[in-house]
Figure 1 (cartoon, helix red, strand yellow):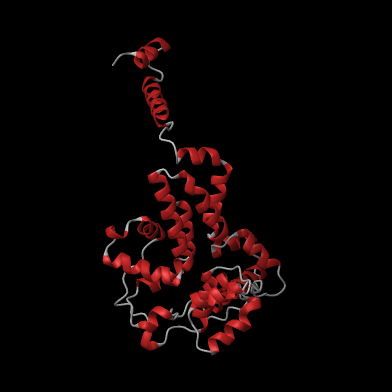
Figure 2 (cartoon, rainbow, N blue to C red):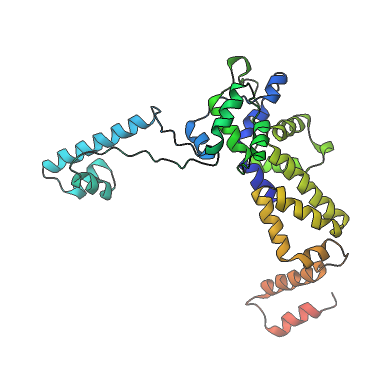
Length: 307
């Protein structure tokens, strides 16, 4: 479950789109996100576009105003500690501004090119041809050697082609966005126990995120093996998870490999150490109840009594 939840969390950006009701064939085949913040897309694609939004300007203005005030109070003879108390700012900040000969704006951090960098020209060409289906483009890039996630392609396209007004998400019609943990439980639940809204959400999500669809198939196979005690089928599923699964699933599969014989035995034979663990827990409970209140003879009597 933890591996599946981690995989779902990686694709959380697609939840809002999956919640929105379908508005026709175009809405299910093409990307249609509202304009996302550039920093969120850059975090997935690794682009180095500088942030020119207006939100960074007031911050620099406040820093410059603070710098000028520190310089003014210092010229009046105030100590650094007195300035720190008066302006309610950390002492180290006051000392740094007081010692600086001029105000220096913060430098924007540049990000590395990212995995999509070698494929951007191809993506731009496909977009000019009219293809905006992120899943299709992601599969095409994989054939060219791309090893990144679907989310990187999805965010790159969404940043450059936000949904048009005719197909934009309507906040009045959009339901609440579920949490990754809730979505994880929906994925492992049988389809008969899902509500209509949950089934529709999962259908939209898996269409936009093939990694989640593949992870769901693998996890449900693992559950079936555990319920039916078909340990002989485990080898094939673990190999599939290592070859084609998301990073959390690959980590889970490697963990099974480290204790392979015990895992296969637990999924094959009817015997387990459950009764032993139950007796151990019972002994610990009695010990904690009697701690500091009786000697070993009474404790032994309670453990070995017929009752």
